[in-house]
Length: 94
Length: 244
Image 1 (cartoon, rainbow over the protein chains, first blue to last red):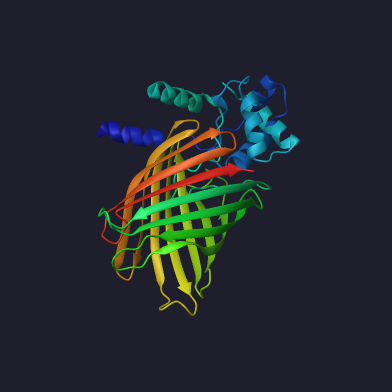
Image 2 (tube, one colour):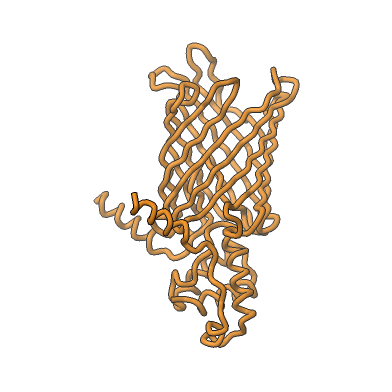
């Protein structure tokens, strides 16, 4: 029973929204913090319309562009939206 | 060889990286709308049998649906419904025919994950072909993702009106499901659905499977087993979705 409660608790506490970027993330990726914030907003808005918004740590920085190639058409991203999403996901990738 | 093919298919489904607009269920609506400016085609194929007897009435329904995203939170869909039934000793059968036209709209009230329960409103207007029967159906759709687990519930209210409707009354229905994302493009779960009408309850339950074998193509399958006498003893629905 204890294990079940723990499992339900862990699943229930799983992050539902992608994390906010910090100034350390911006510095490491050499981009403005506002761009990362805009990218996160775009991930929630555009990706979340169809499925759970992806967590940046789901892929490496090298893997994200390929993944986005497929989804950009599906979710009708324009060039700027796609760029912001990629900047955010790669900056916070695993 | 079949085992090798199955393994290969699972590998392909597991190694593709992106999730997409794959429906987990065929009876339960989830928290999803068509992206702004995009058009989807969905083909629904449903078969049912009243009982397990060999001479029981069997029904068939084929729906062609076109969905369009007006905004990222609001979409509009048009359905053409075709139907056929074999009939039985009590009810005459119907040959394959155009049965109904429907217009559907869905609106997501917030971004996914912002609310404790993601909530979507659904409205559908239908007109039976060749008859004065007009149908209004509303749904409140609640859903929540728990990591790879998606849980969704629908509360449904439906009313029929028109000269060919004997008695206008509200029927209440429900649908609920839970699905686990086994791989990025493969989900497995179960769903249950039913309706209350004239103090009788139709209630079914069954497994649900969905997969996205290609970038613009997905399929969802549900088998349903009747839990009450008013429900079909068995039903099966497949939805094939194509992003245009």
